[in-house]
Every structure is written in structure tokens, then in C-alpha cells.
Length: 110
Image 1 (spheres, helix red, strand yellow):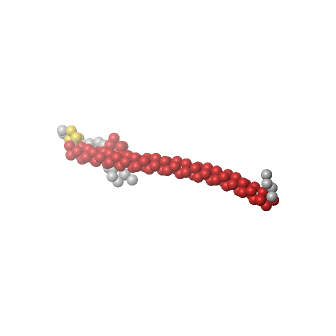
Image 2 (cartoon, one colour):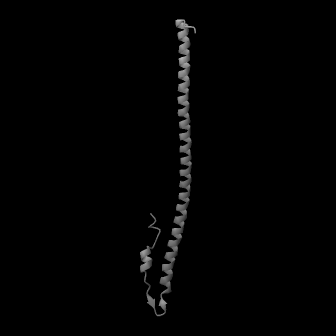
Image 3 (cartoon, one colour):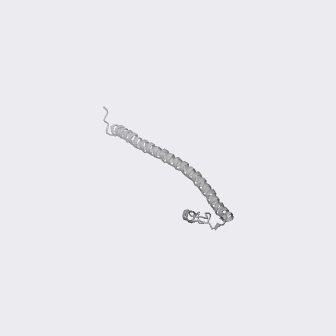
């Protein structure tokens, strides 16, 4: 993914040998190599900052989604509890009505 933007591998930096002139290493060759190293470091910094930003965004999304899941679970539990209590209330109401109807129909006045 990033290979097309990075010139050097760590092994290439380690293995790099410069030709020696009468006065030492060739300055142009050293400068060219150091320019490539600088470029790679700049690219690494850019990549790292981009990934840190992406990690931050994804972490925030993850937190928001977890909060949404908690909220939905709470709402679901509340709805289930409400449904159970409504069934209980409805059953009690039905039994009371049935009892009243039986009293009227069968004439059982207590």
C-alpha cells in the first residue's frame, strides 16, 4: 500500500556503501541518499498522522455505536417489561370482567 511512496527499506539503508574519493565519500552521492531518507521519513510522518486521525475517528464511532447499543438494549428491556406488566394488568382486568359477567349471568350475588 505504501511501498510505492517509500524509496528505501531498512535493509537498504543498513547495506548502503558509498564510493570513496581521494577526499572521502562523494558528497553528491551522500546528498542524494540522504534526500531519499528525508523523503521516506516525511512520508512515514504523513502516514502516521493520517492513521492516528483515522484511529481517532474510528474510536469515536466505536464509542458512539456502543452507547447506541446500550440505549437500544435499555429501550428493549423497558418495552419487554412494559409488555409483561401490560399482559398481567390485562389478564387481571379480564378475570375481573369475567367474574362480573358470571355474577350477572348466573345470578351469584355475594
